[in-house]
Image 1 (cartoon, rainbow, N blue to C red):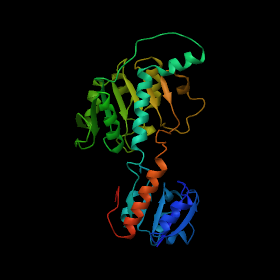
Image 2 (image 1 turned 135 degrees about the vertical axis):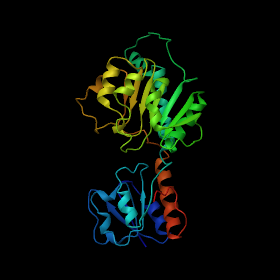
Image 3 (image 1 turned 90 degrees about the vertical axis):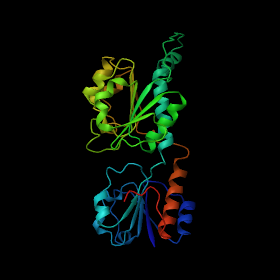
Image 4 (image 1 turned 120 degrees about the horizontal axis):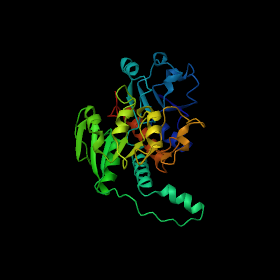
Length: 310
């Protein structure tokens, strides 16, 4: 049985040896921007980020399982995989903890004015400002109650915040005080101190944070987006931040990446910008390797796959 590993994630020799010990012939493909060879198209399993950008699903003759190394799959041709009878699992849970930690860090940075004090330290200034905020009793709306949203809610509860989740079905999720259907978010947007966007990209999530929502937020509210850049109308966000209608915002994802050097967003002192790195972690590679190994073992033994989407 053949498995193709793309270079979207670095698989070291010891990991490849573990996979080979399961009974696989391991093939290194390289960049996903390069189309698969005739031999690679005959594989049984593919592991990668999105190898179907250059290599068409219909050209795979024996493919029966695709293991993604990412949690999001809005760019994956899920319908075509389903039509071809190809099982698909994502990397849900791999990145949830570091993203949740990063989210809490950003909120606290805004509440505790850490950026201001960092500048003062560089300039050797001793200016004291006690107008800081606690997370205690803050009402936090989390758009998306999947693995990432749950881990964020878990950490917010440790700070005695109130967690309100929004999802498509209104189904309950652990660590949330309240859960509502996503269509109820707009009419309640003015009730939250913190809005966190942790949604995948779909028709319903594009600009879900728009001018209307931003104008409903108050001068002490905070926005964090660690989901998809398209979820926030950044032009509208720029306007409310420039006019200081909200306390601050933190963006790890953007509508266009990398963020252009001439973007006005760079000039805002109440916006924290990071270059799509909130999933980074010293445990990230281990979690990816463990998931890939366990699912390749399950596949070859005809057992249940983890994180199966189709």
